[in-house]
Length: 77
Image (cartoon, rainbow, N blue to C red; front, side):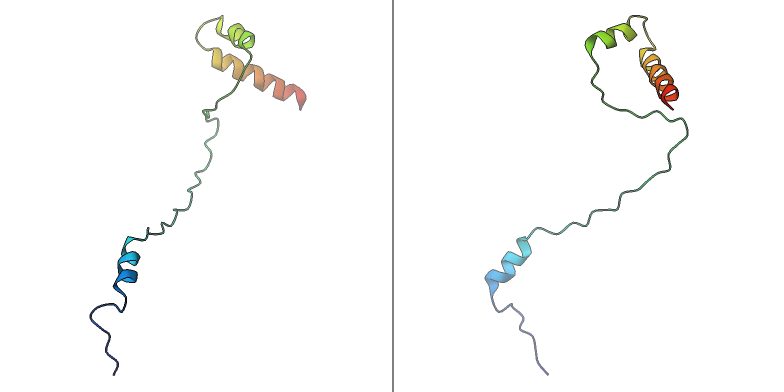
């Protein structure tokens, strides 16, 4: 029967093995089903005069931009 030593053969290698960074396994991305008619937060660059036009009528300017884009989408189909 072969007996294993109580101490590693090379203490430096054993010490370095203790300080190696652990490899983290990335958790798989969870895909959630899309909700119908859900709004999504995006960042969009718009010319300042276009933005001023939609903001001139007060609150609700984001919905007005969305309605305009939806109308353009339907007219091109």
